[in-house]
Length: 113
Image 1: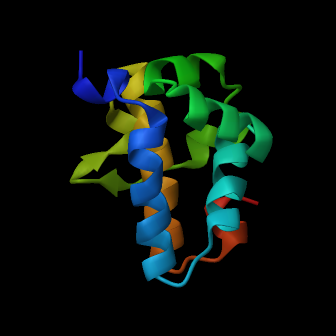
Image 2: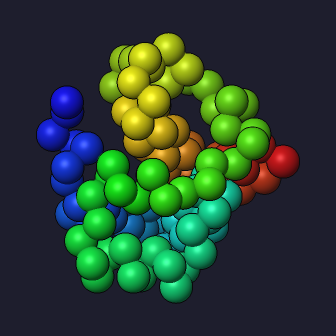
């Protein structure tokens, strides 16, 4: 089991925000990506952050978008579609979407519309 599974979403969330804001993107765009991927809206996300929900519990409660299989590519040299562990794959999907936002990709393409 990876350490990230038991890490709280709140411990990583500020790093996502910082990365995106440094690249000219917004927290609202991050929330849009999280909601598209997981079905978790901003109010529910706030509750998870305050409660210290782990990634394992966060993704267990999430309803993944049916288009999640359209997310392809590499994060840290690992192709997300080839990650064997389902939870790790979901975490990598989120990482990949955040990376795409940070690289300036248009929101329509990030959300696979």
